[in-house]
Image (cartoon, rainbow, N blue to C red; front, side, top):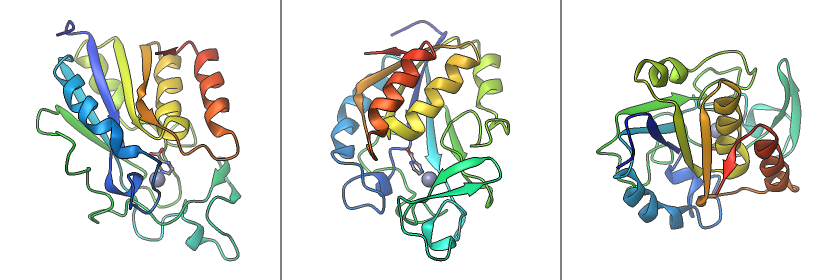
Length: 201
Ligand code: VGL
Ligand code: ZN
C-alpha cells in the first residue's frame, strides 16, 4: 500500500467505452482485471464517469449535417463530435460490470452540462469550469496521482495534463489505459503529457 498522499484515478471504465459500446475503445475491457488489482495499492480511490444528458452538444446527432468523428467550433474551441454515448442513467453510462467500484471513495461525473463537453476530471473543455476534484484531493492531502482508464488520448490525457498543471505529481500507467487513436491523436496526447511533466510508465 502506498502512503496517504497517493490516489488512483480510474477514468471512464464504462460500458460505452468497452467492446460492444457506443464509443468502443479497442481492448478497453482488457484493463479491468489489472485495475481491480491496482486499487488495493492506493489509499485514495476515485472513479470518473462520463455522464451526458440526452442530446448533448458533443454528439454528432446534435449538429445537422455532421457525422461522428468530425469536428465543430464551439465557443470554447474545436470539439470532436462523438456518437451518442454515456447518456445519464443508460446501461452504456454504467461502469463495466467487471470493474470493482465497491472500494471507491468518490465517483466524479462530468460532461453533464448540455453546452460543454468535459474530457478532464478537473475542468470542462473550456479549461476553466472546475469539476471539484481538485478541492477533494487537496483537502484529503493527496499530492500524487496515478491515472488509468479510457481513453488514453482524450479523458486520460486531459486529466493528466490538468493534474500536472495544477501541481500534482502525475503518473499515467499506459499499460492500464487504451486509446481511441483518431488521426494520430494517441501520439499527440503522449507528447503533450510528456511536455506537461506527466510521467508515463
Ligand atoms: C471520452 C470521448 C468522449 C473519454 C469521453 O472518456 O475519453 N472520449 N467522451
Ligand atoms: Zn463523452
